[in-house]
Length: 169
Image 1 (tube, one colour):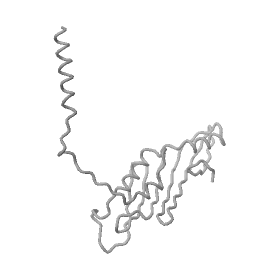
Image 2: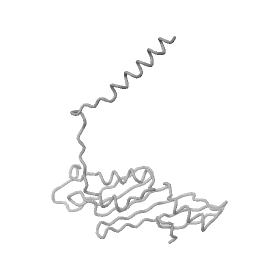
Image 3: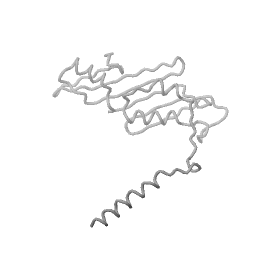
Image 4: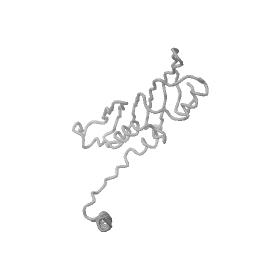
């Protein structure tokens, strides 16, 4: 029995040695595009929900020049991205830079600041539905973020609007 356990232990450890070998010539090259870093820096927040981050990454990484509808003479390209929880309309110039976006997400995680503001002002109420809207403009790098919430307390409902910092509008 000891020989069997010792043999299995030796076999298990020897396979680990081969897992660390990396062949220098087989790693793929990575192309980094920094075209839309201003968009990501402007709209990104640390507590953004996973669907929001996923869709924003798709928008930032989209390559207009390699798309099937690219034409040299066009000045503006509007592209519509969507997933079940949200959608983004993004406008690109001919170089692939994002000029503006209109974003709308439903039933995503609400930031702590918004939740804290709601519970402070309306104790006993809970958030039943939420809509997160964002508009981004490259000119002036303006970003407007807004949450529209439906609150419930028993059979009562109420609609409120807040910005991303929890200030009621």
